[in-house]
Length: 470
View: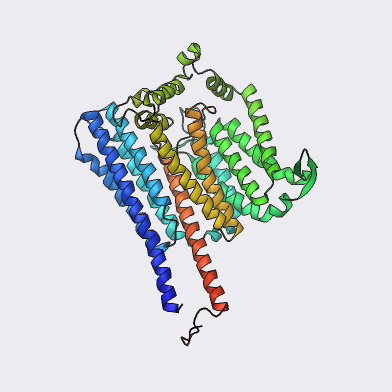
């Protein structure tokens, strides 16, 4: 193969990836626009074309990411952006539908806010794609990201910054704006864990003895997992946030397993968390009440109690009312469930789209996680492999915690569904994750192409500078 032909082939492959992404984006736009118009028809019986402004804003924002990828990350994964766009668009659709339920004549307050948050999140994602030319740069600042994570989690405990009125102390208030630092902390923690585990992998992989078929680590190496466990228990105790505590600890367990290949680390971690959770449930009313509501949601006294199981039960009724194919967008009563636009948006979507619609949404989440894990599997360096795995897993684990809580598989935790639920903090964090995964996939593919070209040149399969072919 001559050099110009090879260069042309690589350029065509890059263009093919981006063209595939553009085609999938068109499909995403059709789905979101159809859903918005169906909501209008279902609630009011007519189409209000002003809703196209919501759709147009999403279209312009995501096309901006696509254009940036064409020039700054042409080899990036072509599936992540369309999938995130579709889920984000469905979230805006349901929030708009709940606006219609509250005020059919002047809807759109929360939906417009969600579009603004989406614009901010995508703008930050674009900035990450432009500024982060190579993911390996992040490894240089491993301990800085660890310090930033600690600061982010301490912020809600500082008097004057902590938002009032919330059960969990995870929000800060700056003027009229509220923000959840813990959402950003899951990204900085993933970077810190990846950088730390790359350097500590050899010592953590050492085995001291076998017990019941498990290859246990040395006692001296238990320090890191004990520190992270204590850190997560601190989140549970001081911030009263069971979901975030579980999310952080699960992230560390998966990354340490991928780094060392030792299942014993996972078993030790699970035993530690279950033990700590049991002690917390016995001594902290917040945790105990969540578990009791999980086990006995239909208890009449608990159902009627302030802060009891009313929200959970209403969500279950909504899911039951949806059945297999749902009531249809605009035809259900998702507004009967408190906080249906945030904590229980899965229940709202399940009522109007049915089990089939929820499976479609879960499939999109699954593909995002699978593509992220694939990026990690193909990674040429340990840091990139761990980072891609951690960021992908944190999305998957958060989806499981949210849907598991709404459907009573696990106790309700208060986390929100990525890309779907109302609020800016989660949107910003998850779009940053998508941007980092896109950068990782581009860097990895670029390095593989460079390695292939070098190998071909070494084997005399690429012409020399004088143009003589092999």
